[in-house]
View 1: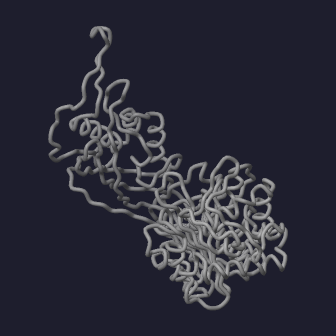
View 2: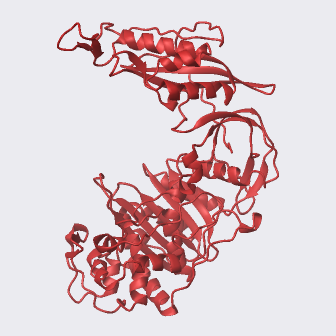
Amino acid sequence: MPAKTKAVVIGVACAAVIGAAGFAAYSLTGSDGGDSGSGSTAAGSDEGDKPKVKTGPPSAKEVRTTANAFLTAWAKGDPAKAAKLTDAPTEALAALKSYRTDAHVAKVAAQPGARSGTKVPYAVSAQVDYKGKQSPWKYSTALEVARDKKTGEPKVTWQPTVLHPKLGEGEKLMTGEAEKAPIKAVDRDGKPLDPKAFPSLGAVVDSLRDKYGDKAGGTAGIETWVEPSAEEKKDDAKAVAPETLLVLSKGTPGTLKTTIDSAVQKTTEAAVAKTAKASMVVIKPSTGEILGVANKPGGGFNSALQGSMAPGSTMKVITASMLIEKDLAHSTETHPCPKYKEYGGWKFQNVEEFELPKDATFAQSFANSCNTAFISMAEKLKNDDLTKQARDVFGIGLNWQTGVSSFDGRVPVQADAQMAASLIGQGGVRMNPLNMASVSATIKDGTFKQPYLIAPSLDKRTLAKAPRQMSAATLGEMRGLMKQVAQWGTGAKAMSGLGGTVGAKTGSAEVDGQKKPNAWFTAYRNDIAAAAVVPESGHGGDFAGPLVKQVLAAHG
């Protein structure tokens, strides 16, 4: 249930008029410039056949008048009248009624800012009443006015954000006794995890409260929150914990211990903060404990744990282990890396169309992240071979019980060119930093240890277990391959200066519609494994690698 309080107060210069059922109605002021309509009039071939219908954008006067009428009706508590002024009256009526009955908003005042074209921003000053508890509620949002194509009349374009900027499709505002008590999340050593100090943990704490609020020993308060849509509730990978917008009375938080290490979390947050957008997860290979989770920007969708993206060449860790086990490739054996390789009607190539000498070994192809060396093996594989390797050895696609909402990776069974593409982390393969950190952790430890953020003993969860392990020989080769990437391959620059037991793999995932690929990097150093993705940036070693190195250098 709701977990964090966000009260947004934005003042806007305006004139407020007292309303009958609320405590204020609406009035637009200011110079718009040009009240004359910019639209034209359309009619039939015979002007007397049917009435003329205006076309084109609404005039400044029409925008003011329509917005004024809608906001006044809303403030006066007349949802039917307000809904008729929108382009979706049925949907609007249900939402406007819910605003009063489910969110328990007793009074509303709408104060406008300056109109910008067809858009009118306004500040809302409301009062929420619930079982004797009252609280003022202020926030800012906006509406837009467009011309109805059939009638030519100006209408408010209906969308949930007309009521509140945090509302999405299928969501609604609710006020009541929180189903879950607030929690005080602490790290592995009992130190408080304040979302203000660790912005990326805001969404994590929300998710933890929703799942463990009734187990942490606290008492619930009275709050106003955004209730997730039915779709968000049914899909764990898309799950969003209800977001608290207003607290009428505070509950008493219970203490919930996590596996997070405050020092690691601080470094992880600092690393992603250097980018415009990035996600990273840090894991302890020997146990599977999640030590750090960070997203930039923080506070929104938790891409680090719930993201679903093509992992690019970092997937070659799983593919290489499969080829070695099937005796199709070995580190010291010759394994050509040509510029191009065709399969299933697709022409594959290496980054910047490089090639290696004909006597190049598999170790050299892996260290240089040669795509064609892997594509050439597609003809010797069954469609489900990679799916089985990912699931049975690395736990990808199993039902991970991390303690929070997470996407557990996907390697679907594919055929022809798509199957070949999946060998290099494209096609239908989807991962996130949590999954790829776990892949490195599995190589380092030798066994898949399902990552988790909350100890399974708290709620008697059963952690996922991979059906089998790699052979000792395969594991030894894989550790050697990843070590070479870190020492002289595509990950050498990022991993330079790091001693101890190290291994790495870079990745650059092509995405339709992007000019630059997503940069990936997964690596381990001693008993620390991490993975990061920097969307639309470039080569994994150049953009994601430095983020991972920062964590490994400080804590590995």
